[in-house]
Length: 346
Image 1 (cartoon, rainbow, N blue to C red):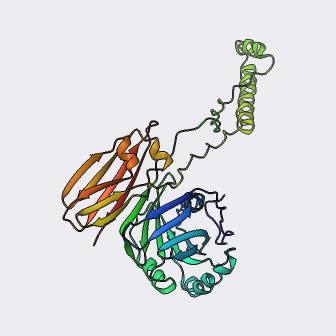
Image 2 (spheres, rainbow, N blue to C red):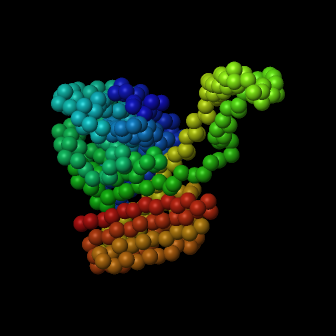
């Protein structure tokens, strides 16, 4: 696919119920996000392709599904047209902003599922951080509801995506930042890059020995003739070597990490916080080491999690503070790691 993707919106990406679901929850808050993992991966791939060109481009898209009782179920998405007349970032022109309301109003009819509505949108920032832009806040206030989601995808050089979740123009409480594990090493069956071909060998014409003997003759004309013949042969060899040389195949694409989550969340309680995570997450069961890094104001506390504590799925942290930030990190046998951070602010 050409990284300089066209502005034509792709067909809605839909997934059958058997797809593995990613669930993000803000415990104690009226917000829960449910989305097929494959759908999140399709969004990441589209944003990574746009960021891979000579000029990395930002992508924006509408999220469709349903929202009920604080639970957002995302079932499909549509790319928002942007011709990048204002630069490589996702910045809409006046004409594109004028047509955005009509574009968005027609999406539910194309969703393919009765009752699906726009529940939010996303924007990618290729290699440019996760800070909200004034244009993004303005678009949300003009065209989306205050409770609609806004996902900001920061696309790294490798194509991995780190997601910051917002609701409205302000961060969620707690705010989520989903950070996938690094790309795995080459797997069996992946294509292997062929070594570049050797340089073209010198071409030797028939009668080379006779030519060498002629070079030893005292005749000046013979020496000039030999030099001319050798020059022609050398030139032919260079030309044939250049024309016939087969260029090496392009390197295989690096496997991209899918978007995964540990469902890390914080719940405010009377005597502190209850830290929760998804103990059934398959990758977490394979972790060799796992720990929590708890930022309580200026104080930092690190809690190692053995197998029993991991399977418990929660950890009670007593504190009188009204805010807390927690990062969970897991390391695996192949040297890769996964981490997720959650913040609670009053």
